[in-house]
Image (cartoon, rainbow, N blue to C red; front, side, top):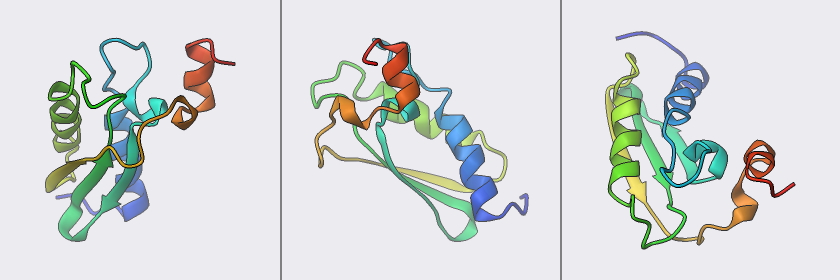
Length: 106
């Protein structure tokens, strides 16, 4: 297992997350603002708190499992836990400026 510091590992985890897209929106889930929190825990375990654009999102199972799969593919990661929450509810204001620009909100 590699010996990256927490910041370097978090950067690799974010890069992995940025490979996951909502199938209905041409922006990755990180830039969309769906990722609320990333914790790098002991032994390079990763805990991600995230939401979906809506509780009835048709990709409700696919997106979190794809995020987990992408993070697990990061060599230094030991284990991954994805916590799905709808508090606070998702709003377009959570998007990055890049995502807003891409989707024509700016």
